[in-house]
Image (tube, rainbow, N blue to C red; front, side, top):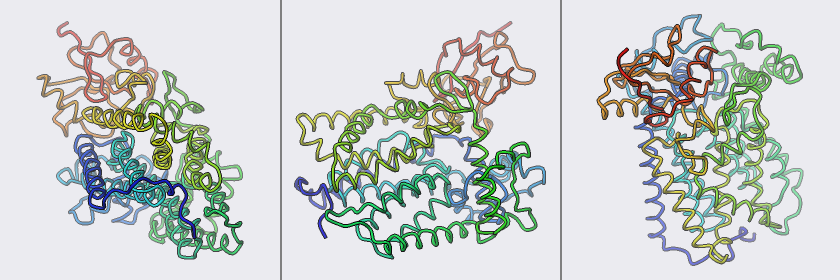
Length: 567
């Protein structure tokens, strides 16, 4: 069997001890930044629900909460709870649909003294480190140790991967299992064998039990399976493809059932039918809805898994409120993720990614077939997200960043051989790392490129989980201590409780809505609230007045306004 492509011109290999030291330093820097993020960020909007859902699923076997995603990421985050004296009050029937009060009590009242969030985030940090090592090992196997170190360095200082790599949500686990499936398919493509087909099936099953977005890659994986990697190899034999399909479908099906504890019903005696508002059920009248109903009636998949698909179909049909460049809409924008990737990537990473994509377009033969394992999945995620009506954050295309890192590793040898290439790459890596380190004090989630105006202009570009996901209460508390502020008015988008951080506040705009001209003292406003997302007309009118005023300071992404005291 011939050697993998792109290895023939590899420079002198570093000594094993030097390579191990470099990898250890980068992993240490990565771990330090992830730990800093986990310590400095408050509970984000989705974490509260995901952790309480994971507990009920893992410990109580209750699958009724949070029908939008498969449960594996939530179960992973809740796994440390098995070793803790967790308490939970009974779930009332009226809380089955609106269960936010129960999740608040579970996390912040019943178990206020337990480090549930810290341990949940620790599991995601461990998964982040494992994925970084996978990317390093994959790059090293293909392109050599220097390219692998380059890929690891890009990962270590990537603000988006750092932002979501320490949060107990579905985004990093979904990215990790997706990339794992891509790597497993690459291994099978190099040498088809039943064991490698089984590994791919297991990886695909883990991804399918984590996020439904993996199904976007089914046609991509099929196309890649048909492409032989090795020079001179003929087309795939039908038996090889049949073996891959059989192991993939069989093991993925078993993994999904295992994620639901091999229970069809979400709760003993509970109806296995859809658990969505009745007015949305018309979205299931078409062919997708009939297929899902057949899967449920034939019990081919757990009822909860079918419901996750149904919720996805409904959301795609109904849309979700989003924000882009000063506009609010529910139908999405084709340019949303173009803007998001440009605004949320460091200048250095954009430069490296552009050079890597240009190199990929020039590739031919076996090299082109290899690079297709990176750019085809990235393109599938990016295009499908850009056409979707649900556009709430760059995190929906988080795997794209990982595939771009792999493309950058593939292009390293080529770029170093160009005139001025080493200097360009050194500058790019310096800009990349410097941007990330400077962003740490405001939080990695709030990072915005200076090319997009930086954090000061971020709310003019994007909001929601791109910028303000409820993570900044600890930074507001620290700001109040530094400035001797005892009480604030707070307009806040999040699921955490200000009192947990000692923040004495009046929630704005209140009922009835306050008038801006009547405000006194210090007011802190989250960008998502400021731009008018997810609000009533009266709330939007209140924040529209604030938008016309320049903030006096900031605490992370939160904008601080000072109003004169007195009448």
